[in-house]
Length: 391
Image 1 (cartoon, rainbow, N blue to C red):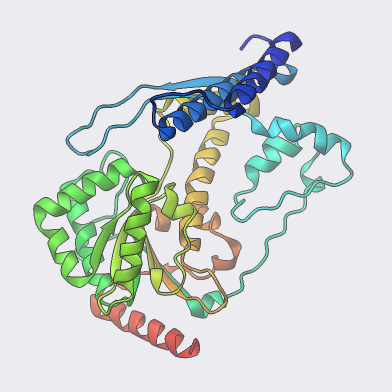
Image 2 (tube, one colour):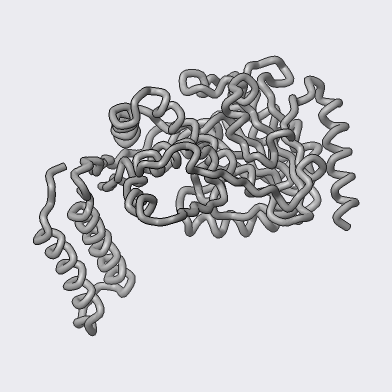
């Protein structure tokens, strides 16, 4: 990206101020509805923000700004709604905006809820600013709950019928795998009170699974155990779905909601108490390395931070931060309790993924019992013990 001079920056600011003045003046008579006028104003500010990002991007000649163009996609057989196109500006190395602060300040404190893994903060913020590993101290708080008694986490590599939980991209559309996933949910939902939140890697994959379950009859069978809901893509529809879900959870049968990691329900909604007595993570939400953004990001990491393992660590970090956020949706206060199922063989075979779980639950995960009756007994005991303790 070519260097942009101060005159261009001033022009970008001028455009924004000019638009603000125009939009805040008394509106002229128009035949357009008010919501259309407001929508037009919002779109104009989006364009101006985009231009402002462009003219302010190349600080210090880092050449790490990119424009990502996503064309509009028509509806497909498996995806019910179309995907709107977008024009997006991204910074491949946001850490550089903190370099001056790190160099000049006596101390810098970064605080967050799901910052682990910390590698990229050290590699991209502190080391380029002249610090060394020994300059950085890492502290992780514990949790308000007793994780060993109020949280049960099961890892599983095979189904009850010995089907390997292989949700890699090349295998995850396997009908047998999808049906086994449905059978597994039916079994565990029988023993879990209240609500069950099931998280899938993407909206597209959820659509594939949903259609497969409906055609095979698994969806109807799951409906006999719990009332089933699905996270929509739009915020307006989400409000209605969540209200219906909360109502269903309060009934004796309870409810199950299929969600998407990275969606609203995995990051912005609290599933406290009976809203999620169980969280089920299906597969691993690794980013699409073939997308335009990820190609640019991985090439940038390889070029500026030395080796391909940096890109691999970045993908693992994105994945496990999303998983950790989804797990955290169910534990919202000191007396809350829940069961978590990590359904993917990679949770049992990849030691690094286990280490990227929050420190307060590092010792909690255990293998899922191979027999349904053994799992039933453990779940019944878990919920009886915790429901009694919170009365």
